[in-house]
Image (tube, rainbow, N blue to C red; front, side, top):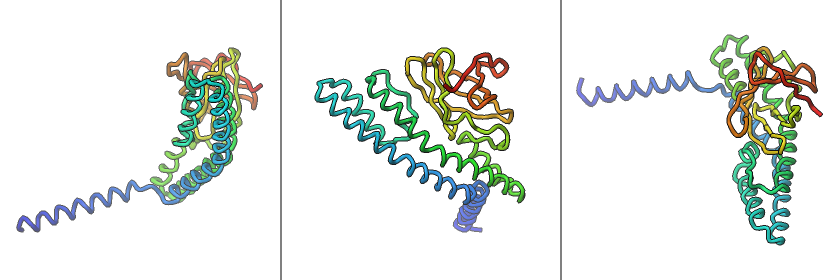
Length: 251
């Protein structure tokens, strides 16, 4: 066999191998379509909230500018630009310490409204992924079932025990005795705030035993906390999964 023919067979063999590997790891079409539908639903739900926030930011910018409060005006301008560039990222990012009080209050209201608007589409996405996982598993399509499970884990869903504790803690503002607050979103993210109102983004996952593991903050340093909600408006948390010794409630 001459060199040209050998090279041709090598290239063909590598192409077949690459195609086979791609086919084995390709995401099921149903999951891709479901994710696209979810992202579109979130965009539609968030759009009027984000547009309203931008209008209020413009009013605040005009107010600060006319009053000669240029540093505050610049903070508002920066916030507006971040929302225009990527509203979802802006909403999950921690607020700057240099933001004026009026901007902090406006931003907080926007995030709460945005979270509330997104909850229905997030809940539908989790439910449909759980259905897909069950369907794939029953049909013996284990790779596809694992793909659905992986997607659930990415967004904070609980594929291990979907019929266990209802996720009644989502969307509520949980307050500790010291005044700190936690809000958990359906997509596995959330907001943590101290008693002074400073905010940080958090991530949470729920185990098969209903225990929440929260990647949060303590004095600007990453900190892991654990939560368990025994009632719709009461729960316990702590720095160890074995010692949930602090109370958290919904006021």
